[in-house]
Amino acid sequence: MAHHHAPDLKVNVDPKLLKPLFKTQAHRHLFALVFDWVLMLATIVLCIRFFNPIVYILAVIVIGARMHAMAILMHDATHFRFLKNRKWNDLITNLVTMYPLFTSIEVYRENHLKHHKHLNTDHDPDWVSKLGKKEFTFPKSKMEFLSTIFSYFTLFQGLKDAIWFFKRFQAPANSGARAFKITPKGVFYVILFAGLTLAGGWKYFAIFWVVPYLSTFFMFQYIRSVAEHFGELTYDDLLTSTRTVMPHTLERFLLAPHQVGYHLEHHLYPGVPFYNLPKLHKLLMAEADYKEKAHVTYGYISGLMNELGGQEVYAMESDQP
Image (cartoon, rainbow, N blue to C red):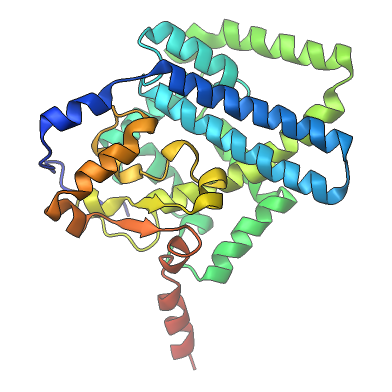
């Protein structure tokens, strides 16, 4: 059953303080993109140079984390927070983030804007697509949650997620998104696959792109998705139907790149680019009513793990004869 929050939520913030936060700075977004790609490529080079099982596992974690980071930047571009020229905003985002992750910004945007408009309701495609799925059913014990996390390292859960992802984020044959983008997307993959074939790079593509994609990329996506809209949340209004997670240092690198932990702030003001979300959070937390009601969790391991409803699970189990 889908939940509904009050649609007329208001947060009292001085517009003069709020307005500057909507200003985009393309160079900051571009720097983040370059950083993610350089880190991935450097990780691949180092792993090849010093290859052993432990180094490879670490490389898969780092590469998957930066794929996830790229997806966060794509999310900002979905709200046109990258470039003012919308055509270039979408084209560059497709070439350097979306096509490498096997979808397109047009298809994602169509889904994502509905998620914002109909958050946690029967008309929210993200919410509806996850209802009833075992991994998104709560309350859940910590061990149940961790077993789902570890299943990504066998590629089992990642393959399931990939099938789900491809069904949702590939444009149907009669859609405008597909008609508009089939040629550049097709050309991208023809060039990519031809290059891999000519260079004999399919093995490296498999072990350094496909494996991280089907394991740690979807694993980090899953953890973030749970953090944003599941667990011990109440859905009577927007301030309690999603959470902001304040990550620790390592968590920021792996789970919450590019300020994505500020999810409540993003739903309140989706036009604020990722690099201004910390300022927005500080501004909102200065409002007593907001601070009292907003769902803010401190840490993924130290905080989110305690908000899975596990205590209720253990209580139910202990009551059984």
